[in-house]
Amino acid sequence: MDPVDLASRAGRIRLPAIEIARRSGLDKDTVHKTLNAKNDARRSTLQAVEAVIVAEELALRDDLLRQHPLAATPAAEPAREAA
Image (cartoon, rainbow, N blue to C red; front, side, top):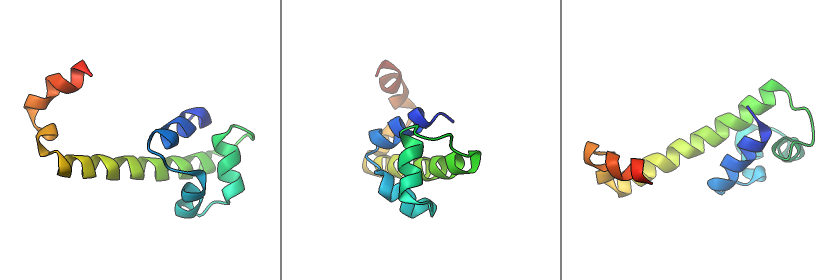
């Protein structure tokens, strides 16, 4: 788990550090420092941050699939691969 990758993923889904802190139970300063690679984060901290990001990514995926049900069909595969 690379903190820069986690920060990029959180940014891509517009998940602020303060929300990651709230959902993970971590201190907001710890999350901010972790995402900005300002400290040598513990594995447990990285795992907690990643768990929140993954949960949000999955929730967004599920929401998009509910809104666009054809995206989940095999016929949509070529369109996804071309993107």
